[in-house]
Image 1: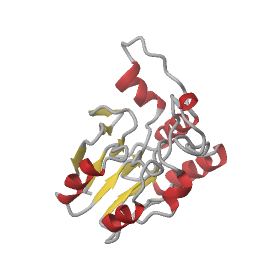
Image 2: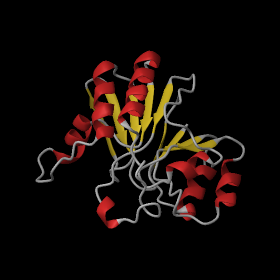
Image 3: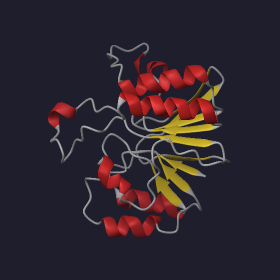
Length: 200
């Protein structure tokens, strides 16, 4: 399966990536809410081979109307679980309901439900838009002067990781390609328009 990083509404870059594989999942920030031709997007996903989760720069309600959308908490039976959403560091500079959505992160009760499903299913592969707080620190904050913002999504994912260590955890959001083992789990951050092929 091909896993694809943030594309931010660039169908020009997305189409060649999915053309080269038989099955794919895009890990959020597809750009739902920033596009105009959703009929074309739905046609690309119509055969069920190519899907996506939502990121913080996707309209949550519009995502639910799209063909190919993977709902938060989905466990596909092959050992893969999906959870979308994240916090936007630049939300103050965006327009509510147009370029920013208050529901970009799941609520605390919704995240508690994700935690319950995660512990019950104990996925072999976890696919999220953001990553656990400690992973973000390890990948992007440590040995820099950058501040770390502890968001409810990253903290909830941290709690999940403390309860169960999947074999692989894929995410986007941070716009850099990083592939590193942490406490027995292979964490893979996919950069913008980046992808990786994994046997599932």
